[in-house]
Structures are given as structure tokens and as C-alpha cells.
Length: 459
Ligand code: ARG
Picture 1: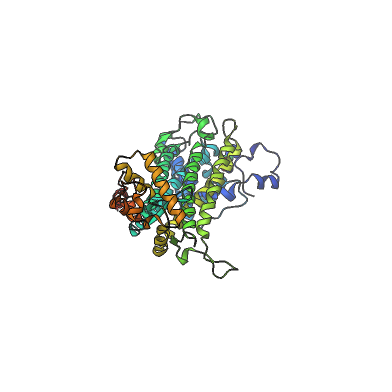
Picture 2: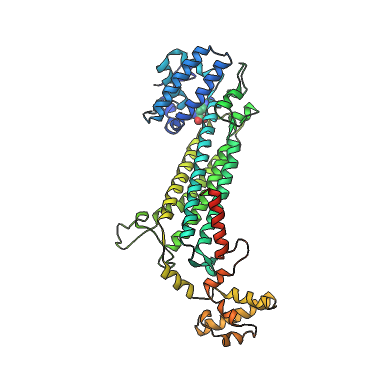
């Protein structure tokens, strides 16, 4: 059984069931690296401030650096009998350098230590997620370029609405992902605050230098209230919030792609390497990857709600309830990072079904609004124009003819203002070409958007 950091006042050993129940090592062993890195900064600070002799501080640092190498080489093994990662690191250090290791816990509690470790973890996780978002954005922009001439039906209420460029649709997700990228950056500002030196809750009577530790660990700020420092998990809530919204965006993309990959839509063709089969039906090609991404948003958002619920009503300062934070944070980070990686690859390998798309476009009145806008240009109030074209659509529908197939004479029966120009508008490609308003779907503005993104990515 690993030795505790707090055994002194107890006359009985911990019940093994309690030991197992309270242990967090199965989850927080993932903080090993951060625990050691934080401890190195702490040891240096103790030496520099003369709280322990410099020679002893150096021994602590050298021992910790050896542990860090073990962790980085991947040979670190969590000790299931340890109460948590902080206990295990302390124990390993004692084994390595002897009793001087016990000086490491000077002017520090696990309360400020675990807050520090989690902040270091979240800082890396947010930075890595941002890099992966960038790569996914690049894959989307590359796909937009690859499919730049493909026009598809755009939908509202999942009913065919107006033609849009497929590229425009893909770039909509690049916009969402940019907000996720920004949000994670904003969360980073509040993650990047040093809690170390808050002690258990009150600070310490020893002459520590928190700003020195902050500089070592590249924290932008030092927390200003020790009670807040050990009990605050807002930064983790924010990270989970940002990841939840990101996961929701990925989920919406997944849903679009799932629909598009159906025979009913037939817009996308998933690469075989990114699809799965059925154990029963030999013909099936399933979008399981996208479904997992779609469903994952629920799990990630659940983690966000979990942590909020853990925090709700907690009295100051540290309470063991907070141990649950890592479970949900690690899960959300792992899930979202996994999705970002796989989705980037899936998009790079996806193809479109041009013949199917052309048939989709032919099939109905996608360009009705363009006809109405034509009348507006001739001075007809929009409400009237809407009414006129509505009548036209109804009559075409009744006769089972497509809007695009109507002769000019037939158009003129509904308004004498219809001319050849109007008739030419009944063409999906033409329809997107004239959507020249800023942010609209014209090839011109989509091309500019691709250019802007590429510039922003430095590509
Ligand atoms: N495993 C604990 C956690 O994750 C570490 C802090 C323990 N502190 C304490 N006072 N028991 O929160």
C-alpha cells in the first residue's frame, strides 16, 4: 500500500474499500507530466526563496527531471494503490532521491497542486484543439476549392429552397469552426492563471514567490485570492462549454454529410476507407464515423452539464467533489480531438456525385425567388412579385411541368414584365451567379472567401 500524504493523525489504516472508493489514480495518472512539471517550478521557487537550501532544491529538480523522462518515454506506470497522482509522484521521488524528497510538499497542498495540474492540462488541450480545428478548416477550404463549381439545392426546413454552391455550404462550417477557435482562445486567457501558492486555502506563512513560479510555468497571471484559486473550476467549465459547442458544430456537419450520403440525396460519396459495412446486409455502406461524431455532441455537452452540476452549491473552498472534474474534462477532450482528426481525413477523401446532383437541380422550382426578384427590378413591389410567381409555381405544378421548362409566352401570362432575361434566370447556375451580395453564394464571393481563409491560415 502506497504511503499517504496525511497519515499522522490517524490511528487506524484506511479501510480498503474506502481506499479504492476515494482513489483517483485511475483517472488522474494522466496528469503525471503536469504534476512533475509543476513540481519542478515549485522546487526551484523553494530554493530561490531560501525556504529550503538551494542544494536540496537542485536535488529535487534533478530527481523530478528523471521522473519526467520516465513519463515522456512512456514507461511510467500508475500505481493502483496510490491515492492519487500527486501521492505517487511524491513516492517515486522519495524512492529516487531519498527523504529529501519530502521537502517538495513545503508551502503546497494538493488543493493548489491539483488546480495547477488541471490548468496545465487544459492549457495544452485547448491549444491542441485549436491546432486541430485549423487543420479541419483547411480540409474544408481545400474541399471548397476542389468542388468550387458544384451547385446543390440549398435547404430550409429540410425542403429544397434555393441553389447554393457546395463550397459555400462547406465554408459555413469554416465560419463556425473559427468561432470555436476564437472561443478556445478566450477560454485560454482564463485557464492561464497560476493557482499554485494558494496552499490548502489560506496561502502560507512561508516567504514564497508566486510570480517566480508563474514565470517558470509561463502563466500570464497569478490568482489573486487563495480561496478562489483552490475551488475555482470555471476555467474547466469554459473549456467544456467551448468543446460542447464545437462538438455541436461537428455534429451538424456530420448530419449534413449523413443525409448527403444517402441514396435519397446522393450528393456525397464517402470513401470506402471511411465507411463501414453491415454484418447482415452485404450491400450496405454505412456512415458510422459520422454517426459517432453526431452522437458524441450529446456526450460532450453532458460533461459540461456534469461539471456545472458538481460545482453548483459547493461551499468554499476545496471539496472532494471536485475530483470528478477530471473525468469529464478528459473525456470531452479525448472525444473532440478524436473527431477533429478523423473528420479532417474523411473530408479530404470525400467525393461528390455530380450526375446525381444535376438531376436533383433539374427537379423543381429552386429558382422561383430569382423570378420574383426579376419583377422587383422592374418595379413590382416584392409582395406582389411573390404572389405572381407563387401562381406560376402552382400552375406549373398542376400541369406537371418544371419551372425551367416554361416558355416565355407562358411566363408572360403571369406578368408582361417577364422577358428573356427572366427566363434565363431559371437555371441553378445562373441563380448562384447573381447572388453577389456580401456573404452570398456567388462563385465570385465564394472565391474571395476561399482566398481570405487561405490568407488567414498563411497557406
Ligand atoms: N485527487 C484529488 C482531486 O482530484 C486531489 C486533491 C486532494 N485534496 C484533498 N484535500 N483531499 O481533487
